[in-house]
Length: 629
Image (tube, rainbow, N blue to C red; front, side, top):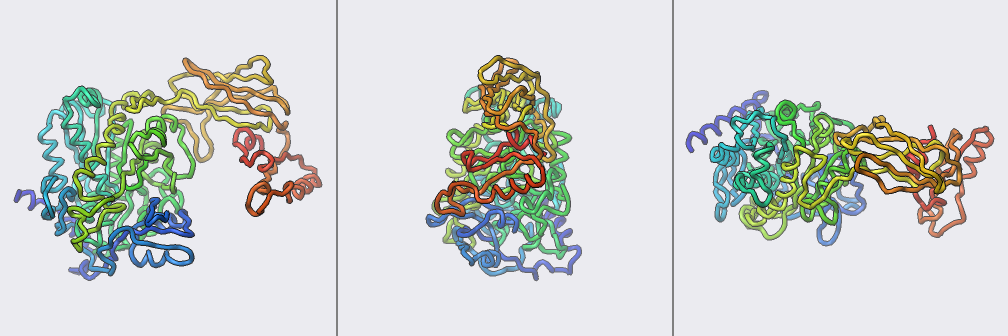
């Protein structure tokens, strides 16, 4: 024990030396940090505006009023309030005034019954210790030492402050098995330092796998470990995670401990959001990440500029190459999958990823909402888009529950240093933490079991991925008409079939669509196959379906409307059948003839798509827009 404490002290001293090298002695003690608190912003709020200001958003509710939960300093919260915007605290706020910036890796004085820092010496438990009173790093090491038959530890790099970045491989014969010889699944957590429940869920999944390494029943962990590799990265951001234990003002710290202004202290202007620092789509726009160092979503000076990201990405590329990955976060009760960089942008492999994650009625994690990543707001430079785009990994973000219930243990409100449960502050309750972790095990082990053949995964829900997913539309504005189907690659060639007005069947081959200028390229397990329907005229009804080995789609029917030999499409969207700006329906469009007359005078042919006349539906890409340049 004394040797471990000495090693921790030496590690902290080495890291701190780098922080203060460019500043006068004791500079950190003269710097101030505003405490980070949780708030709910409601009223006339645009979530895109909040995202552009660098806030991490979660939908929330306080006293019956819905809004967006954010973490902010008191001054940031005050600047948001007013002009129809209300800002309310979420839970108890221990501090409001700026305080002296704490040293990054000092042992905490406030203790918890369950939660533990990564490498710092934990403070005494306020009630009864449920977790061993030692750093989380040592808890993992102890578990690995007790299970050498299935666990091997890897150090894949160093954090900014010199802490080892570690991963654990769990598989049968881990010490002698050639790494990469078995299909792999990666579980990692706590890119965002304040999300302690993510760290606990990761740890308990690790413990569950080890405790059940010989079990044939249940999830059949024994068989998974005989044929697959399960990889665990306990804490992606160990410096930031430890920093959240050091003082009340830093409990809600999110980023790593990059000293952005090189002043020798970690204050509100410092840190990089590691989950905006991954190379794919890095700095794509300033809604999905921020270029402001004071922002919670600051993306850093360049792609993979942070050692926590660069080292892990290199280790994933060169060593793990996972088929699946889960990145644990909190708090929103979501199961998210690519793409995250643009709203409403599913990936080509979404049929597979969505099927494994489940749906709103039957999600893979009970009570969670599965969806494409940019459900609430966009992100760029995040790990799921990066691993999917760069390494063909089917990557998920699992957003766990937020804190709730009575103040207990280290979240007991009687202590002036305690944050009460709510939002990112999960209650210091063994039963609540264990229950949160347990409900995630089945989804995680589905991936471990399925890593060898992801396209035909094994789901505890009994779900399967569809073979063929056609893109349907009700109206066509031309001939030939391109049609498409998203098909499993393993099916081989796909044939297009169609009938016009119930007549004879026509057939044509399909070819792979390589994607648009921004997205839509071939997936890992699916690709979009396209073909052309020909021989149709305005007024025809056309029935379309696709077949491949062992698979066929249900037919869909579209109405042929126009010849498609016009240069221009007028898209008329006046909302004359709606309520904006009218309070009652009006007979027809007020402005459409202006554009028609102008084109007539210029001798330019055109077609018209009138949104109101067509049931207030937008024109589809394939059926309508693809016929016009």
